[in-house]
Image (cartoon, rainbow, N blue to C red; front, side, top):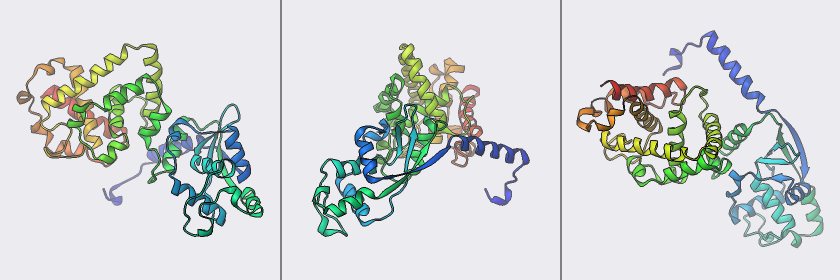
Length: 357
C-alpha cells in the first residue's frame, strides 16, 4: 500500500498517542555507573540475578576472550539493563554474558584464548597481568540502566528481545519457555514434538531450532480461546495467556487431556480436509504463520460450531475451491498480520467457509 493512499484520522492519531503513552509508562528507568570491580563482586555475591530465560545462553570461549580484550583496550562497553526487584536485587534484563565474563576473569581465574589485537596477552589470566594494569581494569566503569517496578515481566522480555534482535540470543518462544515453566508450557512443548504436526506444518531447521513449533502451538490455544483482551501486541498477549494457563492447569489437571484432545482433533481434521496441510503448495517446505493461524484456529472454531464436520468427507468439504483463491491469499497476507482485525478476519474466513459451505 502506498503512503499516499493512507489517510490518518484524528481518532487514529489520538489512539496512537494513547498507546505510546501507555507503553512509555512501562519503561521508567534511572541510570547507574559502577566500576568493573564492583560489578564482578556484585555478580559473585548474588546481588545480580540471571533470569531463567537467559541462563542457558552462554558465550563461547572465543567471544569471552574478545570481550575481555575490548575491555583491556579501553573500548566502549554497551549499557547493561537491569530490573529492580522487590527485595532490592537487580535482575539482569540484558548483559548477563558480559557480567558473567567479568566475574570469571576477575575472580575465578578465567584464562583468555588467543587474542587478535593484544597478541602478547593471549592465554593470560587476570592475575598474570601487571598489578598496575589490574587496577586500571578494576577501576573502569560501565553504565547501566535500571528499570523500575512499572516494568512488568512482558515489558522486560520484550526489551531483551528487541535489544538482541539479530543476535544469537533467545527469541520470544525461547524466552517464554524459560520464564514460564509450568503444566501448560509442558503441554505446549509436548505437542510441538508431534511427528504428524511436523508433516502437516514443515519448517526450516532454523525455525525448528528457534522453537517455531512451540510458537505455533501456543498461538493455536491463545487465539482459539478468544481475542477479547488482544491489543495488537502478540508477545504481551501470549505471555499473559501462558502465565494464566499455567496457574489454571495447576488447579485443574484434567484440562491437560482436554487441550491435548483439542489439538489432536484439529490435526485430524486438517489432515483429512486440507490437501497439503498448512503448506501453501503440495511441495512446500515452510508454514507461513498467518496461514497456520487461519487454518488451525478456523478449523477448531468450525468444529465447535458444527461438530458434524468431523464426519463429512474431504470431497464434500472441497476446501480446495477456496484454499487456492484470491480471497484466502489476501486475508493470509503479511500486511498488518498482527493487527487484531486482520487476525480475526483470516480465522473467521476459514471458519465461515467450513460451516456455511
